[in-house]
Length: 296
Image (cartoon, rainbow, N blue to C red; front, side, top):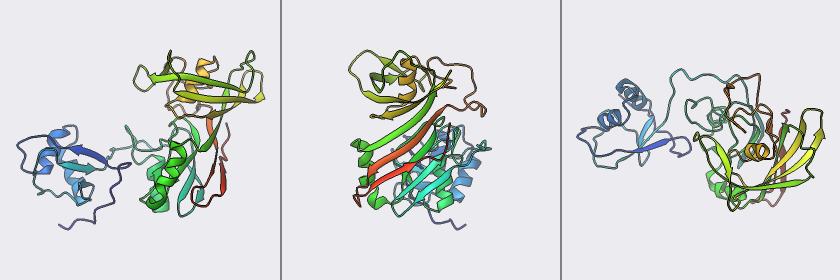
């Protein structure tokens, strides 16, 4: 049986396992032992489609011997009967180096948990026929709006530095209860740490490691429209900061308290939108601004 050419290796898409010590004769036997929840038939099928690779990117076959402890294997996660997400992304910009997409609510940016193909990354890879796409930043699955992707390995580090060095201006919009007693613009600086359950974040006393600038765009009766400018990029930072101020973002099922609301209730999207990205292009020196076409 001939195998297809092995696909590219990229840590953002491929998962990695280092096989432990064991009596296995083949890598297939080792993977079956390491992942008892995945059937042998599934591993055989993945190998037949070139979806299991060695450290150099070569295809693992049914006969590939288990040669040493710690042998590094790359594999591509697949979810059987993955639930379709009934919302479509919009590609706003494509050039040699960058792709900018408008992500709908409920769509993850990268594979995780029960989502692999139903993610913005995998959809764009197929749509643009570019296996080199890598997200330069992330937004929550519950959040809609702009996501910037590197489309070229050669220039990737230059654009990654924009985020690492805080040289990119990110602006979000949110709907939340009024903060009538506060003066704007205001800045929220707190220390954020992992909370309970593990997927939540909370504020504690101590030196701040997060900062958000908050402005008011529009004052309604029950909800105000806010502009949120995250200076840092901690997990759930905007949601936690707004909740900490006493104005949790509308339809947030996790903050300030974890509710029984279904996070996939398509009738109640989180009212948070990644509205714009502004930066000086590190290659051309040009001032660039991208703005979401979505609304809240």
